[in-house]
Length: 103
Image (spheres, rainbow, N blue to C red):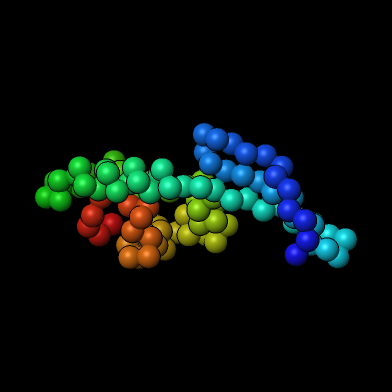
């Protein structure tokens, strides 16, 4: 791949958009997000939440960065309750969870 230039950066969300020269006369727009703060906040919330507290209908179970949200939307996972629960319960996605247990 060729040249990569920053198009924009949003400090509040941690999202950076890049213009990437593919070297063949085409280009790609890449979106990247630094979500270390979100992950750390999720860990803190998980530690603070009583494991024995019963879940209510409006219980917060996760905090998902925008770039991940849009990826899940594009894959149809957000619009499929069963698929979203499976994704949230997957140990690989535990860093997005704000409390333990099964959704």
